[in-house]
Length: 78
Image (cartoon, rainbow, N blue to C red; front, side, top):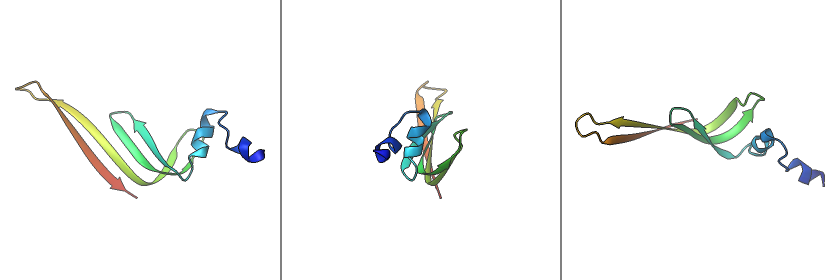
């Protein structure tokens, strides 16, 4: 029964705790996204991630055609 209680999500940070050592997806401001393995976090939600992939999406408007130009860049780190 104690094992079931450890796996229960009762508070918002419980979901983060259950995601330790799992790959997670983090959406940031400015159209930035991170995917990586969650190693640690604190009460302020600072996170330590490993094997991280960062995706940055930018949208520009062509001055002549007024069409949207979407660019996506991917950075991989350890």
